[in-house]
Image 1: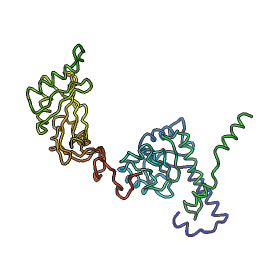
Image 2: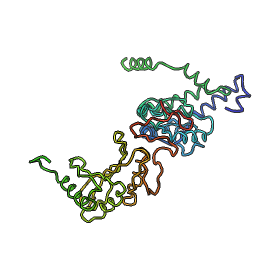
Image 3: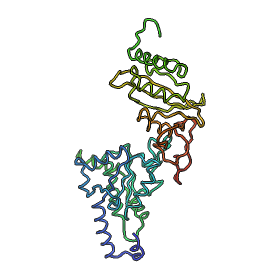
Image 4: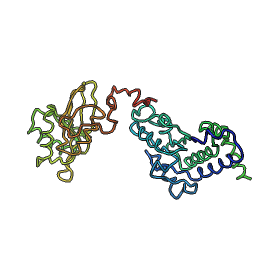
Amino acid sequence: MGLLDASFSKHNVVVTSVDNVLNWARLSSLWPMGFGLACCAIEMMATNASNYDLERFGIFPRSSPRQSDLMIVAGTVTMKMAERVVRLYEQMPEPRYVLSMGSCSNCGGPYWEHGYHVLKGVDRVIPVDVYVPGCPPRPESLIGGLMKIQELIRMEQIGLSRADALKRLAEKSVDPQQVIERERRAVRA
Amino acid sequence: MEEGRVVPQSLQQAAAAYEVVREAFGGAISDFDANEFMPFFEVLETEKWPDIALFMRDHPKLKFNYLACLSGVDYPAEEKLGIVCNLESLGVLGHRIAVKVKCARNGGSIPTAAYVWHTANWHEREAFDMFGMQFTGHPDPRRILCPEDWEGFPLRKDYAVQESYHGIKVPY
C-alpha cells in the first residue's frame, strides 16, 4: 500500500483500528470491472442479476477500470486478449484484486493442449488472488470466490504485503467437509 | 448412379446446374461428383475461378446468389491447399452445389471471389488466416482471427504452435 507501508512497521491500537475500518470499507464495496470473455460471463451476469443479487454484498460492476478494485476474469483468455487484459489490470487503481473464474482462465481449460490461441492460465500475465474452479462455475461458486476475496481483505494490514496476506488466508483455511458434516448433523437433529 | 435408386430432387437440380457450367467452361472444370450429401465439382484451371463464379451468380438458369460457406482445406498428400464454396440459389431457383478450388501448398494463390459475393471477403480472410493460401485481388488481405504477427497457419496438418508470443509462453 505504497508510502504508508514504510511508515508503519509496528502495529498498535490506532493502526489496527484503521486497518479494520479500511478493510471493512473495501470488502463491503468490491466493485468488479464489468467485462466478460466467454460463457463464464453468462454465469457472472446471472450472479449479478436478481436471483443471486450480488448487490447485497455491495458488489456491482463498473464500466471503467479506473473505478474498479476487482477484476473477475470470466472466460477464455486468448493470446490476442491477454495483452488487453494486462492493460486493463494496469489501469485499475491499487489495491486491486483478481478473481480467475472458470477452468479456461485458471489453466486453459479444455483448450490446454490443442488450443493454440488460448492463454494457458491468466496467472501467466497478471497475479491472481482467488481461483474459482468450474466450467463454468455456478453462481454459488462465484459467490464463494468473492467471499474468499473478502476474507483476503480481512487479512490485510497496513505494512503487510499481499503475499503475506495470502499466506495468512491459507493458514486460516477450513476443511469444508467438516462444515458440511456439522450442518448435516444440525439438520438431522 | 445405381439402377432403380431414386435420385433426390436436390441432386438432379445440382446435376442440371453443373451441365450449364460445363457447357460454358468445358475442360476448365472437373466431372460432376454426384454424391447426395454435397454434390460438387472442382475448378481445374484456378485462374478461371472468378469468371466461373460470376457466371454462376448471373446466369438465368443458375442464379447462385448466396455463398453459404467458404471453407479452407489442407491436402498434405497432394501438396495442395484448397477452398470449398457452398453455393445456393436462395429464394430464386432453390438449388445448391459446392465448388472446390485448389492451389499449391507452398506459396499458392487463388483468385478472390470477394467481388462476386461480398460474403467471400471475410471467409477468404479466415481461410488465409488458418491455411495460408493467398487470395489474389482480395480487397483486404489481412489475418482475421489470429493476431497480425502470429506465426504459422493453425489448421494446417503439420502445424506446430510457437513457443512464445510477445514474451508469453504459449504451450501448456
